[in-house]
Image (cartoon, rainbow, N blue to C red):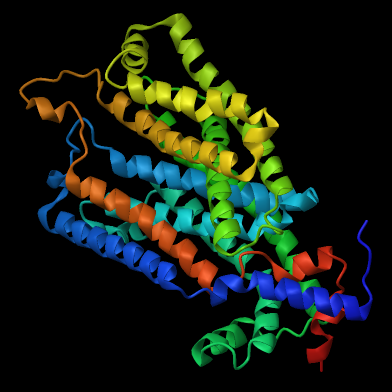
Length: 453
């Protein structure tokens, strides 16, 4: 039970919390400048590679008639997966009143915004004629899963932005009133405009509270739909490896694994970089480690189901596909994703030592890398076995290997996501100040009473 503090104690605690949680806005050293320089340079090179691809056409990639999806669609599915963590932490855990997840809710939304934004951009980059993208909206057919995908991604992005912004309003008001004259004038004006005149009174808070509850409920079906619809892009075909009815929940379970691993990475960076050890504490990392074990177990179940059933029947087409995965060219990647991305994390994280911040972060990094390769082997090996007459075509039409432009654009996607996370951390607190302060027993009237009319 939260104990209310005396007004004097509450003000001192609030000053300390505000100072700590706005530290990310004040850090402006050489490391920060170098990091931004690296991110911007990689993004510039990636945009140049995309421009070159638009000029020369998709022929400069490794994609051909048979393997028409490659690294780009793998990236798309990966970023859509990572974005789903906003649903798990900011909505489901919040609605279930799981209080330990409160400090990481904003981190989860930052990750969700960066990931779903890049997922949408990657689809455009995968187009040979991105100038015709508007035709998807103007002349799209409802029967096309592409229309479903574009619709849910756009909706999910809008709701994620609102879930990030609404709890930020009271923090913006605190920064507007406490940082006046201490930050650049343009930055102060941004906070002043975005705070919408918030003064901390009961009516304003009630509006924010009910709006948040509504959005948290709305994002659950939308979040589940975004990955279910993505899975239907594969499962709606008759290709071996994709022709299954479990792809919806299978993709959702895998999304929670990738998203949880990504949030752990960002948490650790914020903890070290912005000296937030007392906020992203060992207990939160321990619980996130347990969460990662749970979602990995669920995903492992779906992986066993994915391969056991067709392996037992061993139809000709399925047999060729499974042999390629288990012992063929794709075997090293396949076994890395299964053992390094699921089995070992589960076994190691059952031991408390490995749920400490640094070991957990390293395990989560391996899991995140394995999650990307998992998307790659979902996409490519199936397309390399079309089970159609393949004749009178060059050998490289049948096999896929990503080219330098594809790799460069892929790196652009990751560095652009990191740039979005960096910008959000430099502009806004990485933990909700007012919510954390309230959880520490500081009443809202203490936070805002100096500024009420």
